[in-house]
Length: 138
Image 1 (tube, rainbow, N blue to C red):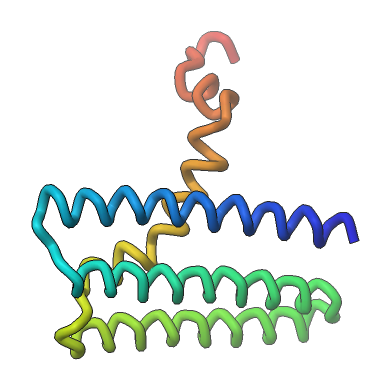
Image 2 (image 1 turned 90 degrees about the horizontal axis):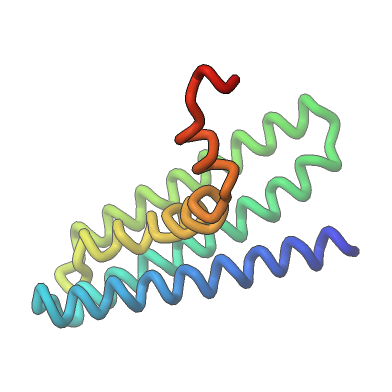
């Protein structure tokens, strides 16, 4: 039960980060680049699909760890393919639909990845210590 609470907390933190990131992107898009509703709709569409993919990944991994290794590998691989296909369909829809901006959709799709990198890698002091550590010190 504690693992579930921690997973939910991580998901909530990521959701907050994605909302903040996309809010900043939306402000820049509207104010600086004069992009309108298609960009914002595409950004929202891509973000919602990215969050859905992240949730599906969570569900897949929780199920896979309770399976025997062979079944887990097949299950995880098939679910990966489904998520990948879903992302492809989203990009295709964004390309074909004039009400969606493709760039906005793609930014929405990658926004969760950027937030994960920011929250887990760039907030780590050890990461920066390792970057600036001299080879002679090892």
